[in-house]
Image 1 (cartoon, protein in one colour):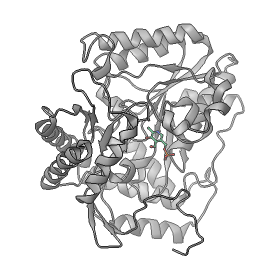
Image 2 (cartoon, helix red, strand yellow):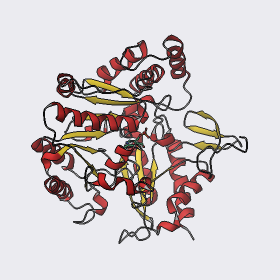
Image 3 (cartoon, protein in one colour):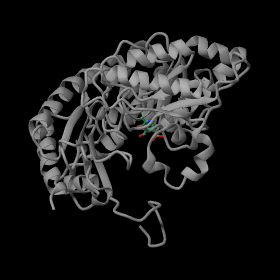
Length: 441
Ligand SMILES: Cc1ncc(COP(=O)(O)O)c(C=O)c1O
């Protein structure tokens, strides 16, 4: 790259990837990296599939760009695939964006419009959770709980803290009642009810949350009963439940959607990342007919982003989702996820610096701590996550660093669903060595 170009924006260590194939990334200096992170927990069917690239090329030639509300063959195919094979029947209204942040923001806007359309102008608050990530726009950042990504913004977000209150994220390891306490579910439901009451439940438009907290918390699976209790709470107070499945959606956790691990259904479901498997930028918002109808009756529009539902991206997504169905990749994510979790537990259950292994399907993480008994984290200055990720790269595996700055140290895994058992073994062996190197000295 020429000297004058400042890209990436901030100087630092950037890696030059010149080829990607299957579960591997290849650098310009000839190193092969196992993509244990699927990029940013995105790639599911694997890198470099010609059959997806062919659909993208076809769509580009056939309908290069068409305004988002109109149909194209690629969009129609995606809509059919989604409704026939993936979405719950009741979530029949579809709005496509060009990424996860746009999709979460659209979902929040739909919730606000829904209440306004019904004459309820008091519901202006969006309740989020203390440890979470919902995107990089100002609204999704404010609704989220990723302190590290709010650096340089908190002064400007001050007024908005009132608009975006936070409930605690269910965190079984660190439950105030005790680690993995049997009443953890009830504890976090009560704590959420207390926030509803403190801010005034009648002022909350929506509760936005990830079913399994993604990289901000490190694949935190809520305790039993939590989601059923939260669903009931939202119903009791007329609050819409927005499920942010940008990271967990489309098979990542071993079921089509993360919320399906429990007996609940969201009012608005949000997706991104794996929807198009990394072949194109795409996000999706799916909601009920009556919510869409309320907006229609109120003369309200869900404004599109110019590149939302891009014809080539929709064609890519339709093909990726078809491959996942044909090859049984969601089931594969479930069984390989169990294998990965077992192997991680074998490697780390007695490790002095690993507090726990957690996750579902092929979204797994480890949490590193200075003291396993007290769960005291390492000092932030020690940069443990970065050191472990760096040590992994040197050994040929790309792990995904997680945490929020406040929550640390987290190493996430989210490999493509086509990874083999032997590659999983290599991944875990490498993580073991990387943790030892990263926490040593
Ligand atoms: C749960 C969750 N929501 C939203 C987003 C934002 O998506 P995007 O980066 O595509 O805008 C992310 C991205 O990491 C995410 O993990």
